[in-house]
Structure formats: C-alpha cells, structure tokens
Length: 548
Image (cartoon, rainbow, N blue to C red; front, top):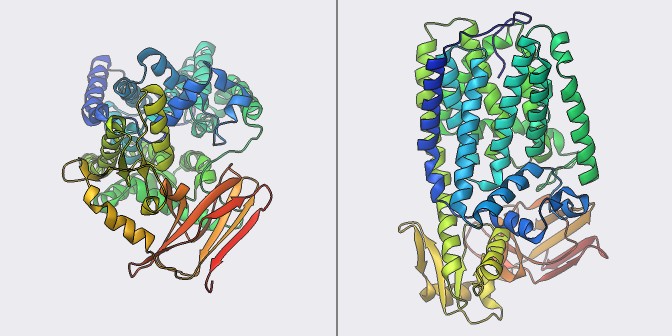
C-alpha cells in the first residue's frame, strides 16, 4: 500500500467522482458475483464453537479476563465475538444471515482498498490493484470461513484508518486524525495483525515524517490502551495457538517462511506467472529511495506471523499480499513503464483469475462437503453414524452440542478412526460416508463389518510413543519407523489427527487418554494400547511394545 508520491509533496491523484463511483460499483459487482456461493454454506470449522461460547455466557461477558481466559487460545480478538454475537441476537442460528454479513463486509473492504489505492494511483491502476487483492488466495480463503470474519472486518477498518490518516495529513485535520485513530483501534481489536499498521502510517509518502508523526499522537495513545487492555485480558504480551515452535527451531522455521507464503499466494503454474509480474514491479522500487518504505511494510506484514510460522494458512499471508500488490503497482506507475504496463495489467488479471479459480474450486469443495455433513448430522437419528467427516473433530463435537441442546434432537455418533467400531458402543444400525460423486452422504453400512475387522485385527508390530508436557506445551516422539504416517487417536476414534513423528503443540489439557496409530508405506497398520496421560503428576510418559 505504499504509493509513489514524493515525500513532502502532498501528492494527490486527480479526482473523478463519476468514474470513481463506476469503478467502485464494478468492484462491488465482482465481489458479489465471485463470492456469492458462500451463501450456500452451513456451519463449518469453529463456527459452532463460537456460537456455543456466546450462548453459554452473558452478553459482552467475554470482555472480562476470567471469561476470556477460558478460551483455548492466547489471542485478543473481541471484535469477532461482538460481530458474531450481533448476528446471533438478530438472526438466531441462521447461517445464511451470518454469511450475508460476511459477504457485505468483504464487499465494503474491497471498496475501501480501492479508496486507499486511489490516494496515490490513477483510477485504472487503483481499480486493477483492488481487483487483484480481492481475488487473491488469502481473501478467497477468508471469504469461506465465518471464523475468519475478524480478518475481513479488521481489513475494512484498517483501510479506512489509512485513508483517514492520509486525509488528515494532507488537510492538517485533527478531527480526521481522531477518526483514523478510532478506526485503527477497531482494527487492532479485530485481529492482532493490524496492530503494526501504525508503523506503515509513519512511512507513508505524505509530507514530512515530522508531520506524519504529529498526527500519529492519538494512534500512540490507542496503541498504549490496546496493549494495556490485552495484558489485562490475557496476562501476557505474547500469544499464539496451535503448533509450538521452540527457540532452537525458530531459525529453520523462519528461513522456510517466505517459501511457504509464496506457495500459498502463488500456487501452480499461473502462480509462477503472477509472482514474476509482481516481482518485476517491485524490483525497481527496491532500488529507489522508496525501498525502505516497502521493506518496512513487508516486515510489518511478516512479524505477526512468527508465532504461528510452523504451520502457515492462506489467511496469514493477507497483509503481505496487499503490501506486495500495492508495491508492485506503485513500481509500474512510478517508473512510467508505459510499454509494459498494459501488458502487465492484462497478464496479472489473467493469472490472478486462474489462480483464484484453482484455489477456490479446491477449497470450496471442502467447505461444501463440511456443510453437507453438518446438515446431515442434524437430520440423522441416534442409531446412525458418520464415518470420517471432513469437519474437524472438535468442530463436529460442537455441532453435536448444537443438535442436542439447541435443536433438542438425539445425538448422532461420528468417528474418525475405525478403532471406534472395536469398542463397546450403542448399537449402530446404519453408517454413512461422504460421496464426492453425488456431493452427499451415502449409506456404507455394508462395509461396516469389513472396516471393523481391519481395525480390530491390526498388526501388533513394534511401536513406541514418548510424551513430555511443560508450560502448556505437549511434545512427542513416535517410532521406531522413520517413514509412514502417525495418527493420535482420542476417545477410541471419536477424534483422530495425522501428526509428524516428532513435534510439539500448545495444549491446555493435562489429562488425556490416547492411542497412537501407525500406517506403513506397505499398507499395514498398528495401534498402541490406550495410553493414559496425566501430566499433572507425570510430565513425561513412555509407552512401548516390542523393540522401539
């Protein structure tokens, strides 16, 4: 988002209200057309967990430390819960309305991005850049998941904060600076990735750095307020969730981060075309006096990813994606590459659309499958069962809560590993599994005995499992096999997770009973016995069968 204006120049693009309005309406139409299919989706991933949490607590009680700290992560994103709770109060358990809210927020954020680009770029460059941002992999990922709404609403608030700040500097207006500071505060409360936005504002190419710093005084107070509030709520300045990274692993993880983010933003062959076009635009900027601005923006985009760098998701690349696209178009505009610019714009649009469709078709199919499975779960009886759903285990459990406590219907069993069939369970009369061909669940009851026999007669080959729990981090090592696939199974198949042979994960639970499953490259499998873990009394545990 770094523009080409000269520092201290107070550069402005020519104002064309009618054409700008038309460009904005076209962006609205593109966003609505491309992302309208999300209205077909149902509750997926963490949606039911968030609704469960909101239902169990009084309105806005999550703003109290004792309530927030019951959440299984160390993040401070209250605006997400405010947004979801608003939908819940207005519409009840209606996913269509939640997704419509999400779609409207996405459309507004896309238009706000155009407004920001328009501060420095001609209309056609600002329009193209906004469309490329809109169709990028990070945005396509965020659009499909209600649990990522805070990224979208934070994006909207951050873009408006930047636009208001630039207007404040140009017009020497403290009221606009105040509006920018309030919007900045909102974006920070939406998601931590927007907290470093102030560092980007200070390096924007608007007047002198002293004038920019003067109008950032209110933002500094906002940052202090946010930091203090975060400390009160979390009891820590840090955060994170999921996979743990030890200090000894950090150099390797960080060295691999650029490559992983590049693979996410620029997948497949068309991604290579897109990365070349973006790089051609950025390289001249990096050799100009604006290089420091771009490097600061890139650093600010990458910094919030470090705590979760071991396992990156497309949404993590959002801030970097916007920075790269804005900087690339700035490079083409700054150096007046008029012979290259039309070709670059056509190429970048074609490549972006191709990458978008590739990513969208793959990921939306998964979201659609989860929606089908969730809807089916609500209609099934207590003697039916779902085998290997795409919905993650914890989310499936929350949907079970929705079915039993909200809809008042009997629970339906589900499982992620066939060892479930080997243990005493209430009688299952029918078993269902997702069928890609029909995009629905099919009855696979006839296969139930076969799957049960395969699991119950699994090999008793050598196997070992070591666990170490310290400071809410669970570390493990499985063996003795270097190749093949390991799974951690909880509650005899109610949950199952493919995991690396050795790694660590942030986990608040201290008492667990697990099995370890190993699948060999040759096709055979083996299970450990149930392993009772009580880290409150035994922080280290080892189970072994045969020569480990």
